[in-house]
Image (cartoon, rainbow over all chains, first blue to last red; front, side, top):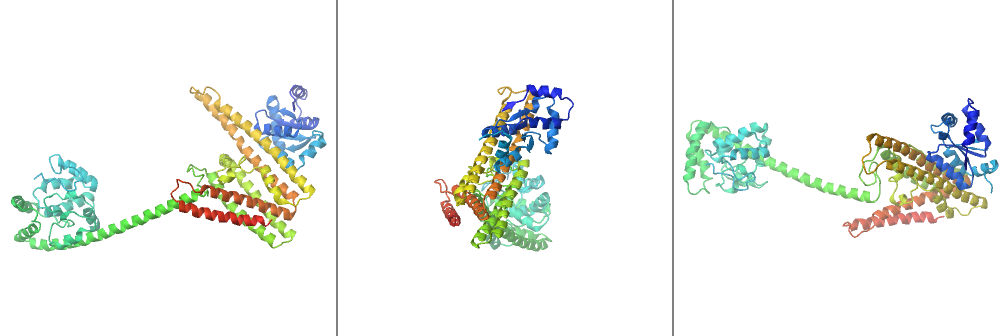
Length: 123
Length: 485
């Protein structure tokens, strides 16, 4: 997986003032598999391990390592309608959800086709 | 005459009524009978001058005053239970000694007016008159060589003396009546005591029976509501509630299983069978809902698996069964499967395995993080209180994540069961759920056998043998069910 740090900061600076949710959507559409995370969160660690175990390379945004991460966190909480913002997964620019939705989709066999479709997974 | 210290069966002390005696005596005696000092002072003052019977007669009102007894019955029990130290004239034969239930006959057989009847109450006598008389009498006693015998004489002489006084004839009659009453009351008291002792005995037997039952139940691995894991430790409210709900759920599940079995043997149509199968699945949804609630109140209870039987517990993964393991176990039972179905089941097993792995790694990361937090700072020296509290707060925050992991694990289990239902036909799904039910039934039976297995150091081998044969029978019956497939 690759972490967007440099370009993240620069990007944020240039887009100062824009709506956090818009920013989220924009970021999500830039890569096949996007995960919003917090570096100390263990559930985020679990979800990262899940994708790596499947042989996928996710793009991870650590919200605690960004000055405007708090805004994004709040926006994500509103989006999900839950008290915890992370981890949250976007595949092919579309919202999949938090850990429970990701696991459910993996069990019912919809996750892999979705990843393949988005180009995150080959084989 | 201070030498009449209690010799026979003296429990209180050697001093009796010697100089330092009274305080000893009365303290000890008071301790035994909660008698106020006034009574025993009386004893001291008058003691040497009194014949025993007279002493008793004079003593009782004082005693009763001291203890505050109002009714006859208590009076008598006071006397029946008093120690032999009250027998302050040891020179008199020991037929005075009150033995439980034994003495009444002999006492009653003596002269009714006998003051040797140790149960006789004593009417208050005019002290001056009596003192004189008794002083004389005691001197007579002292000079009398055969002390052993006189008990029969003395009361008679006493009676004679009494008779000599004017107005004391009436007293005699009263005394006689009272003595008779008291004998009767004493007899009743003895009967009550006997009844009480019998009650105690039967209660004791019942207690040991209950203890045995409890031991048996514990060893069978039955977890009653609030009973916990046999450690006898505190069980939280949420945990107790969950235990209760879980045992109810297991019972309900058995009902679903019999319904399924019945449906199979009745060769129900697919449509009808589907209703039963969906009912089973909904019942599993119920347990996950219950576990979700329990995780909020007591996640550690779920994680430790105390609510499950020992054999189930050895397969425990994040507070429940491991989905991929269950799928692996079920696969042979589901034959014949189509190619498509087989692929679906294999994928299911594979993906649940991946998900389990991811959750386990996340869980390990949590454990590591928690350990680091607790271990931070100097461990050998006492940490500064501020740092310590700060550490605790952080650790507490990390612990709250446990709930999330257990919930995700349960979510995985639920999804796995639903996916199985999706892949299989109605009849296959029916067999699947029956197989799951049987599997866990067997695990529970195994637990039961395990805890009641014969061991060398156990005394109650008979019990174990009986239990073992019962459990074997249970396992046998489940085996028969399974073999119909």
